[in-house]
Image 1 (cartoon, rainbow, N blue to C red):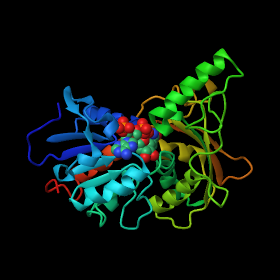
Image 2: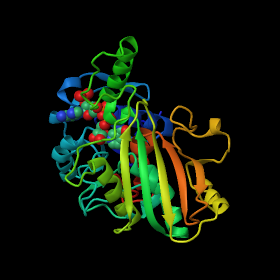
Image 3: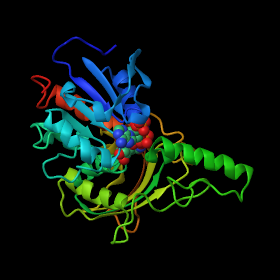
Image 4: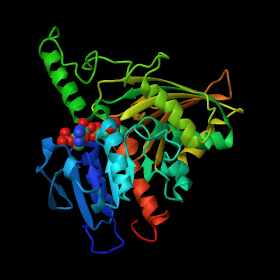
Length: 352
Ligand SMILES: NC(=O)c1ccc[n+]([C@@H]2O[C@H](COP(=O)([O-])OP(=O)(O)OC[C@H]3O[C@@H](n4cnc5c(N)ncnc54)[C@H](OP(=O)(O)O)[C@@H]3O)[C@@H](O)[C@H]2O)c1
């Protein structure tokens, strides 16, 4: 039970509480025993009045349009970029600390972009904007393994290819994949739903996520570059990505090529990665034991396998990453930001 009467415990609002990230935030608040003295679940008028349980207590979902952010010390936003663009400044103006899961403020210079295991030091002071941004779901696991490599050997270049799950497009994305799969199994010539994924995702891989930019890269690919540079504080980091949607329900994977600044000893690299918090290294030669979205292990860890130093270039190596995009890539990162701020940061002396 984490509802407490302690006046130092925050009043929490979850905007987008009915979505897959919102649901995961609720699960994690329960699992981790985050203390709160009020809980407000907020979504659109479509789900206002719907009841959701938190720690065994029912809460009616409130319409965002009617919600008074003066009632929340911390607000987690996971309701899409347009909703955050409009409503996060409203919440911040009321003094609420916003932890935003969308793309709206990630590159704003007054808003820290935080992966607590990598750059928690930026949370010492309250951000000028009153917002802490959560990075993209593929950026979070990537920077967590890149940081120690940068510290030890330096990084010359990173090339990442992602294999991203349908849940990255929210609950409608999961439904569209499942519906399309069922239809295709019944009739291979059936017209498959293609609202969230174009072309359809069932029995397919789709090399485009988010909108296409003039550069020929997608916004998702640009986010990985810009966000990694900001989090690692390497404004000229040479990183390039191809982001691909695959017919997996949940958990993103990434094949990552890193060219370091000096020759890399494989054993040392394995040891360095294995020593990271909440990272599991799967260093088995047996292909059946390689981490996959279906069977990686602890859902709150970044799983690393297939660690290969190139025999032709001792500075270059490959990593295979698997992590739960709803947890590690979204809700867990947001909760860990809140936990850090409440324990060590600018809210430690009180809720505001
Ligand atoms: N899924 C991921 O892996 C992931 C990872 C990182 C970041 N994110 C970001 O998190 C956000 C939510 O993603 P999701 O996957 O949870 O999506 P989702 O399952 O589709 O849920 C969307 C949530 O937003 C609410 N919402 C939509 N329009 C709204 C409006 N006009 N006013 C108030 N609430 C509104 C929905 O409420 P109703 O029930 O009322 O429609 C629902 O609670 C997105 O910005 C996404 O980019 C997602």
